[in-house]
Structures are given as structure tokens and as C-alpha cells.
Length: 48
Image 1 (cartoon, rainbow, N blue to C red):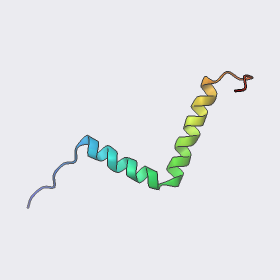
Image 2: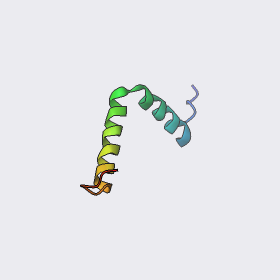
Image 3: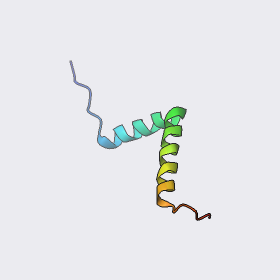
């Protein structure tokens, strides 16, 4: 029996990205992390 071809790292990244784009909970979690990072970088009290 033949072994399936191992996927390259790029293929795994593409597959993972595709799955994440379909997962609304994952998108929400990523957005929250990005917002948290922006809050840390932006000095408090300064409005844009």
C-alpha cells in the first residue's frame, strides 16, 4: 500500500488559513487579539 504524499508546509498553511476563514469564532478571537495589541501600542488619552 502506498503512503500518502506528505504535504508541504505551504500546503498546510493554505489549508489552515482556509479553515480559519470559515470559522467565525476563530475570526472573532483573532480580531480581539489584534484590538488588544493596538490598545497596548496606542498611548491612553490620545484620540485619533
